[in-house]
Length: 392
Ligand SMILES: *Cc1c(COP(=O)(O)O)cnc(C)c1O
Image 1 (cartoon, rainbow, N blue to C red):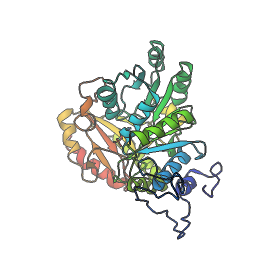
Image 2 (image 1 turned 120 degrees about the vertical axis):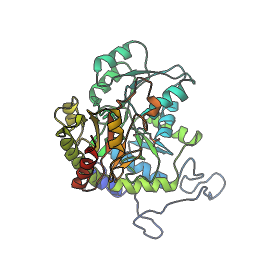
Image 3 (image 1 turned 90 degrees about the vertical axis):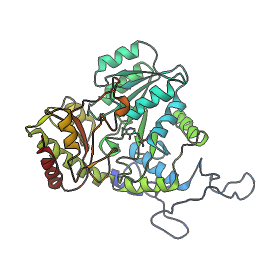
Image 4 (image 1 turned 180 degrees about the vertical axis):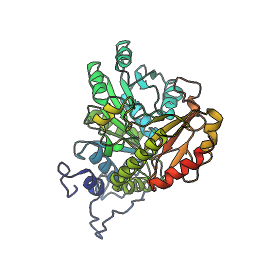
């Protein structure tokens, strides 16, 4: 038990204290990292604190799971979080836990490329079917749900890298009407900016590699739900399929989460400044940021998010070659895959993160760059983009 009242404390208090019980032996304010792979019982069949073997349970992983449950559900006692060795491992565990061969998953048309690859290349051969739709078009979603029984609606919002926004509450209602589960990948928004379970989603998934870890130094994932049946099945997958995360990786995400709120505030303010600056640049064809008033999902984003996130995508008038040149000309923004760290990253999706979907219905425009805006000084970030865009 944690000493704070989780119902009445704010996000940052929960982020810092949930799962962080005072160490009873030394009084360490930061709980130790428990590396041990195994635990000696008091006697045969009599475990000391429920721990026996580290794949299934580990105190450092438990601390992280409590912390994530407290942030995403507001209550670590009624919410369940399970963490994994990557975001994709978390997604695999959820799909294996909640679906059966022959089931159908309806998935957004610009979900993370790896999620699509998992469904298309790994799980389709195991007879899990999928259909791709535009999740910001509710008529299309209703048509897909009407066309045949679906087990799951799988949604990202805002999406990667097109920054489309889907109406979580409306999708939750549709999912309920057709007896499907609504899964929201909340990696881009984080629970600081968006709480899908409170909007009616059944399950939230995360790549903790991104904003939750926040420092580009760990790979991990999480599944969060208040549905006890799904929770137990996911917990079983974690133990029986074995993609649980390590104690050290658990600790790094726990440490990252303590500063999630302050980091996100800066990510949002920097991204807002950059989105406006890019919008005024003559070489820019389009800026995709839900915080811009001309963004098609702006009103929905305003309704369901408390900030518009740190991701900005931009398309250039000058075409593919010029876009690639810009991508290779920044100094503060590093050309690299991934996102959500304190340092700014720049990604050319067509040939990097989204190369695996190049010839599919998820393909990304070739004049598009995705920015993961870090928490450096906004003036330096804009100065860096300014010099890189001179080549246009
Ligand atoms: C990175 C990412 C994933 C996959 O997570 P990994 O930790 O790389 O396995 C899933 N969804 C989104 C939105 C992501 O950005």
